[in-house]
Image 1: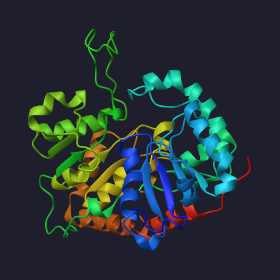
Image 2: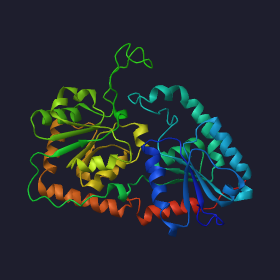
Image 3: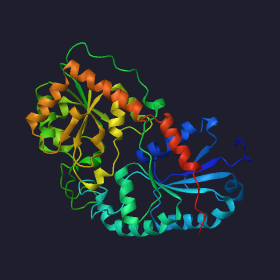
Image 4: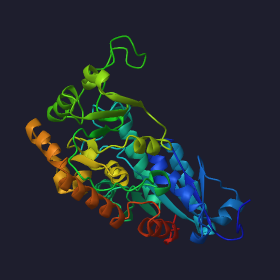
Amino acid sequence: MLRNIDQKQIVQVIYRDTSGCSHYRLRFNSAYFGAREDLGFIPVLMPFPATDAQWLNCTKAFVCQRFINEQDYQIVKALKEVQPKFGFKLIYELDDLCWDHKNAGVPEYNMASFNFKKNAPGIYASLAKILPLFDEIVASTEYLAKAFREDFNLHNVTVIRNVVPRYLWNCERKMPLSEDLKKPTVLLSQAPQHWRNPIPLGVSPEFPLGVTPMKGDWTDAWIEFVKKNVIEDKINFVCMGALPYFFEDIADKIKFIPWKDTVNFPGEVIRTKADFELAPIADNVFNKCKSALRFTESCAIGAIMLGSDFEDSPYNEIHPACKIKTDITFDELNNRFWNLCKKDNYNSVIKWQYDHLNASGGWLESDKHINQWLSMIDGTNNSKI
């Protein structure tokens, strides 16, 4: 039974996928905010809007994830027509680049690029019609927000960063090391879209001619760093989700954990007791639009994250000692890693990451993040049609 149904408290959260995007951007927030009566709104997750008069009378706002086609346009157009009568706010929500920006979209090594190439023009055309109907556009990063402003001439774009729910990522804070790390546990939890595994000729109906492998976000230095230290038994390497083809020859020397759904993923990561996480990414427009979520997760579990550093990289916010230039050599990367394994250096970075997580509002439950959501749904709407 809806509480306070006579008040305008419902926020209809319209999702478009069941991936990590909808969980971190919408589902985790809805679960937590829905349990907080003191916040004054009721998030309701739905695949399509509820548009009968009873629902609309009680609806404060619609948060619409990744509306990118003609059907979506018709849905928003219909809502826009009745907006003056019912007074709700229309909010657009997007986490990843889904159109060509600066003549670049999904990189070739990401399997989604095969469909992106043929769909991108239509997506852009739909967005050009859809976005002006919304009162507010919400992006996960400033770089993505800037792309919205530049490509669609928008001035109502705001940023709400990706955060992690403490109710899923809550684990005991690490105690400082009393001695240097001798054989650290190193975690790779990247999705397989960060590289491209090969598909042999005639194996896949979708790709009958096969698919050639690509290193993607990985460079030779990163690959050599992992393989050499695994072969020499210097690190415990844990790979989650999918094994990159360039690590197949060390598969018997590493721990592999099959991919978990987004709700169970945090617990699985916590149980690895990782000392480090690796997050190499290539210098391209798609990655620049992405958030530093992997870093926020690393901060939550008390693991040092090594991430790629370049202009407008999402990992520009990480600790300076952990920023890895895209042209780094194996020796430089290896020396950097083992220097961070020294107890004083390790303890210093871990403390910095914990402090950064709290100060930046990286927890979903933080006042900063809650206030951003309240501002998003309570702001004025533009009811002109």
